[in-house]
Image (cartoon, rainbow, N blue to C red; front, side, top):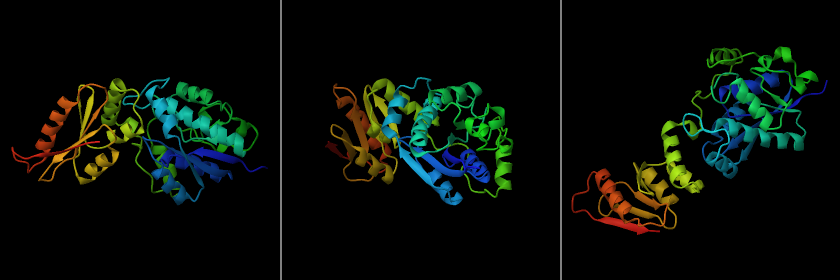
Length: 306
């Protein structure tokens, strides 16, 4: 019998680890596929693939993913997470690789009902339809609860050896991991910043005020304390590393503010309109003084306009 060639969407989380291992135990030739963007990286996937000794391919789709985040057809989850559209985009790209490089099917670690927005039955059907992977998208952990796929019908994969996991509990997955000797895997919180409520609020504010934002703006959202003064963003560094990051992200038109003769935060002002930024700069000076613990009332500022 032909050995199945499987392309597995692989985040490095427990579900994707188990999906890859389940297929490998059926004799499939497994290649892991991970994506990275401005909002999540490939760190967990790299570690898990190395631990499992399976080949990993990483695709950087930051710019395409950013466009989707700005205008997701199926909307956001509780934070700023367009999970349905994100999964569909990943699978579209996986389909291109599958067809170009001769894989028999694409597999994921999705579990029916595990996530209320993106992994209910309707959402799984939407993602499959929009990725044009009908019949070639296998979800090994919940396969017995879903219609048979073409690789199952062809006998490339034994449906009876697939699973019927559903729901939000990870008890079955953890039991299976224990049986297979899989001990080191990340918590289910995930590594996507878009699911974080605090980051989600920052992103939604930016999207409302300046929808043309780019990757540099997103990177800036990840550091410091954030304030708005009309259409100007004020970012205050909380520690030396954040000060360095903020300085590195400063671009033409930004204003950098710090105390002249005492340590403290570096504060950035970025104006997203053509209006006067003076009011925001004065507010930024206040923040800089407040967070500089040793700054006296007469301390002077250093101001650098890029």
